[in-house]
Length: 80
Image (spheres, rainbow, N blue to C red):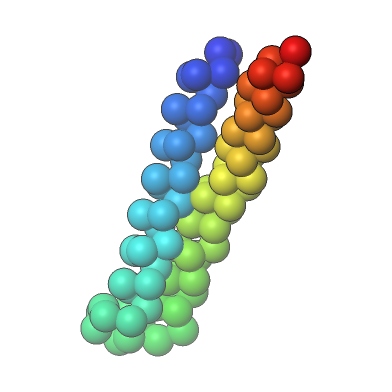
């Protein structure tokens, strides 16, 4: 897998994670149906938030690492 394809895959994962986070917050705060479900509604909204974090945070760290590595390579070429 090329680096460009991996970055696109990771950005997609971040997008899915952010959508799940927003869905979890919406379900928890604004959905009357989730309130009528009681504890099950809380669990569903919490699972959306948890999976959103699982999808978004590690990929952000990896992309930051890739960008820092690329910047170091560019600065190394400039000093030579």
